Length: 100
Image 1: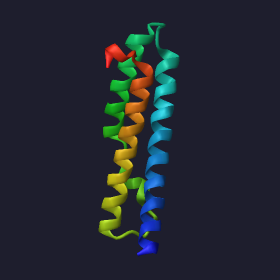
Image 2 (image 1 turned 135 degrees about the vertical axis):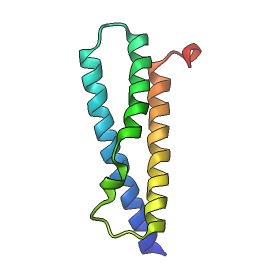
Image 3 (image 1 turned 120 degrees about the vertical axis):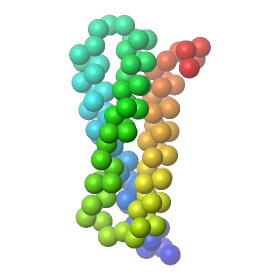
């Protein structure tokens, strides 16, 4: 159904945007406080982003949206996939290819 797909897409975007906003803020603070050892900082930052992702209250980002359980599950699944992809891109950009 078109409405259901639209709701899931909207919910996916909401969760992804809120999660990336939180992670970007954490990353900015981390780098601002770090010493100038780019490779070590990059490794630590990637680890911190993964840890922080596990701490994010992703389900609360969907509060206020009227979704079925199946829609919520689909939106969360898509959001986690997008967050993971973004972290992989950041990791690839932050670490030299031989360090991956």
